[in-house]
Length: 212
Picture 1: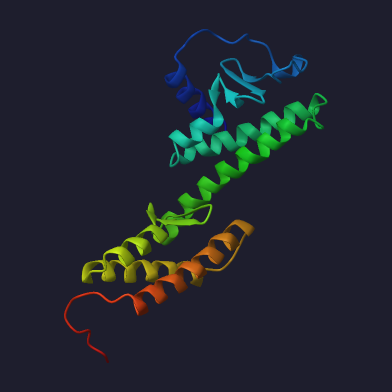
Picture 2: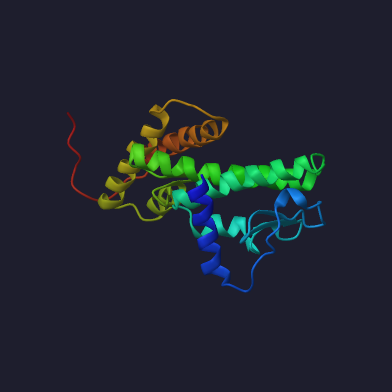
């Protein structure tokens, strides 16, 4: 994890430049200030406020995740850093700071969610994300494809949507392991049924389909 934190520091240097050095003071020697400043290393500074959230060297952790969604080393470093940051704040009497704890929990959820998606992609060959009621497979919005097929049904579109149905079926065949996956599975079940309905009710021009 130490190497991941160094990787994180190197990245923030590139993002914000070397505007100046942090004070070489051990984090445990500092009382909590209004930004809950945490210096785990001389050139690494964690801060928090309710406006910008948690930052590393003045770089938003949420933006780092958004800009580097597939960087496993960075994501692991962020998760470990958030854990260390919270542990430090708690040791200084900040355990009851609800806004800070809520932000840490939210960021950990985002980071670990990204790591989970990377793992699923590597092991299953398919990237799956749920945004509200929209299920994305390999960056394709399944429900949008269904609507496009309804507007313009073609043989090629039908074959494509049948392939999407197969991928949705793979999601349903996987074992449920978390509350997050349960939500994905529930939405996948709805989409699977929607695809079956649209394939059965929306005809498309083309040669007759052979039946076994």
